[in-house]
Image (cartoon, rainbow, N blue to C red):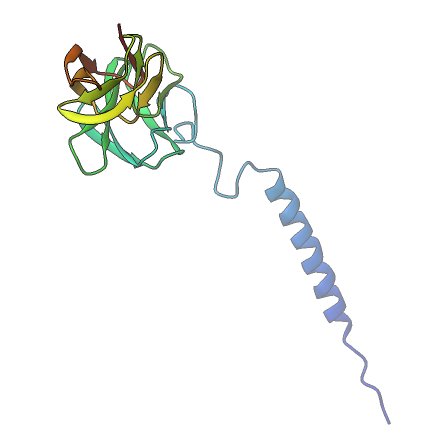
Length: 195
């Protein structure tokens, strides 16, 4: 039985391929990218760009507008960026998704290329406190809300933007003892103390 000897040139080809592959790997490792150097105008660069970072803590999904132009929809608890914002004053609005109902708005004066933030908080609430001396019935915009004992306070939660007419009547004889109009125009808490 005769054994066939493997040709020597297979050995030299294998060694040659190994050397070429090693050189190629070393050359490519020294480059920034196999596709060439990074572009100076890359969109990933933070240089010379102002951005507005919007955070939604409102409790529902909102549509974000800047200067009246729709930017994006943002879910509760999420943050998104408006990129490439020009150096200028920008009016921002948050609306309930698919509606024209504004739930928060602000103006941001962008004066330099940096990140600006807008945190949309929870909806406005009104804290009603009874210091009148007797139990009262509390109404908002003509709708009964609750009874309030003397020295008690309660919250009206998630109040819509706009003017709201408040009134208080005695529980005993339904006589009106106080009224006011509260203009809810920002995402903050409001208070009405009945005295």
